[in-house]
Image (cartoon, rainbow, N blue to C red):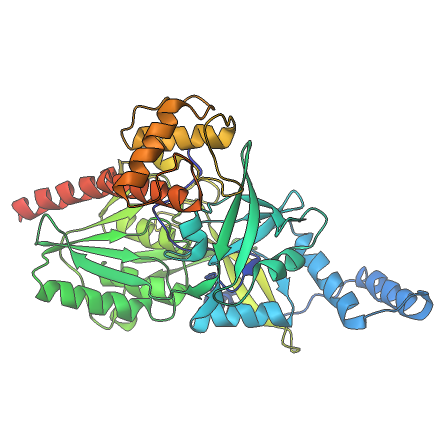
Length: 481
């Protein structure tokens, strides 16, 4: 199978655990109570820290320029966490800590994606939030932001870049993205980021199957899932598809309650290991799920965007519940973070534990293998169309090649391997514009590009092989029962 590290752009799904927030549009995974159970809060004294104190005093007393003492301390604290070379550990100053609190507690405005620094460049860590401006624009994991509103990001700190991308609902930001060898521009209008984490419906083809999409594990996700299952049962559901694709995770207490619903009491949900090698485990119980159990046949959908808490859930159901996991190998985040207030409205997010599957496997940077492999068609992994200029006959570029590939995926007789805007390209664009009541110009402007992407998204959804496989598996299980 091809090694695909991108998401289908129609899968406009969720944001990530990472180091800084793009306008609050993210969900961060933290596991505070587990940390408190296993690690003592013992400060480490180190004589090397005297160097920091000496340098601070030297600057304060002798530097000829003006010194912002708070900024100096913030820089030192950020430097220590960055030196860990761990994208999940970071120091958050007051505004960043407030942003994190908002993302965990309620609605917020922004573009719905988060970033980390890789090779000194701001990089999208995982997939954007479903339905968010970033998702609709086609931003994907590992995209590098090289410009914000035509200003270079190289040499800027992550906080500086993020502050430029943040903004109020209705305002617009222009991002220049580098993806592999391709560079393109996106215009994104900031909006209110959706926070609903569970959506359920009866399958359109089989009224006995409930389809449940979980976009993250937030503060109320357990209750949302319980209510969704109750409603689907009333509507006739006898089995369930749990879709965790592009779900970056969430809160540990939520995923444990949810996994417990599908497991017999006493079965292992997840194991933990601290820096000394000490291990513990949490198991399914009435204390977690309140006695609410799901005994109907259930399968779980995952992909490379399913991370951390999603992987805990999938591994628990696979190894302790004997449920089938369908899709592609997951992201592979096997570490646990805690958040600690530093008494001045700043916070530290720190990796403190490893989490292991019920069988004791550490899947960090490896991912969880599905029981059944099923993926989207290759055209689902094409890039969005760059919005930096209108494309027309005679143009030749990698962006045009991408347009040709998208048009070919829609069934138009266009060579997907050419970088030229040919007569066939123009005819196909004319057809898209005609069919969707757009001005027929034969040129790819912003509205036409958006429509092409919408049409491709519909086709991808109609060719969701993983979901189709899940339905077949459940139908087979239902027949046996």
